[in-house]
Length: 257
Image 1 (cartoon, rainbow, N blue to C red):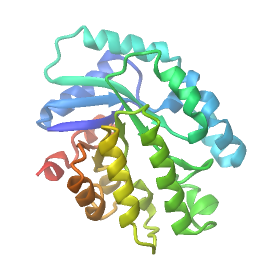
Image 2 (image 1 turned 30 degrees about the vertical axis):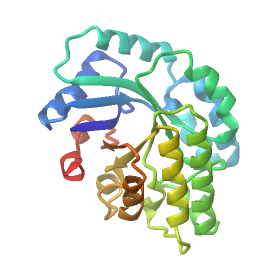
Image 3 (image 1 turned 45 degrees about the horizontal axis):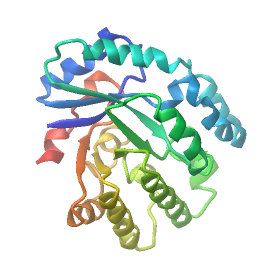
Image 4 (image 1 turned 135 degrees about the vertical axis):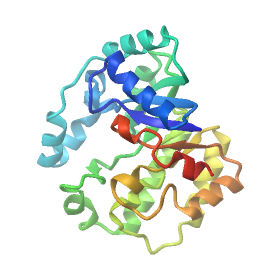
């Protein structure tokens, strides 16, 4: 039982807060827990978000509400947690908001610390956030062709996998969260992603976050995509995308079965 994607985002970077997630994992029967945070929490990654801030004032307001911290604060927490005798296996990493333009910047910055894992995730399409309840429909989904958005999302994902920067790909079909559905055949796209994931030894998430956070009917990755990943022999990791300790392990048992 693995929960491969849980966030400290809504609390302090302290051992006590970290232990809330670990204790929740133990209670849910999780054997291995992956703890991380978004790159948008840390000062060092702030330059990556400048294009988002420039693209729309609502995105600028979203980012500027964040209380940025130095990465060293997180490194200190990891060191302290790794010095403890923990009841289950706990790994620490980052969820990186990926855009192709940031590849060189990320390569340098990510090599400066020996993370246990690195998740590459796409949260924006060429500078426009696609998953914000307050404004993403207006700035992206209701403005541009759904097929074109999906096509671009998976082009970015191909580039992300081929970058060699990541061990894991976060929520690989999260575009479905607002029920905008492409009319094109997605099979060739899923086949390309699966082949690349296998070639680059990247784990693909079966992520339950959209199910319980956005009430999408899929409990994890959609069946068509999941079956293609399995057919290619891709390593699939279960993940809750928990942003609060009470969500650790959500539906992990069900998707594992």
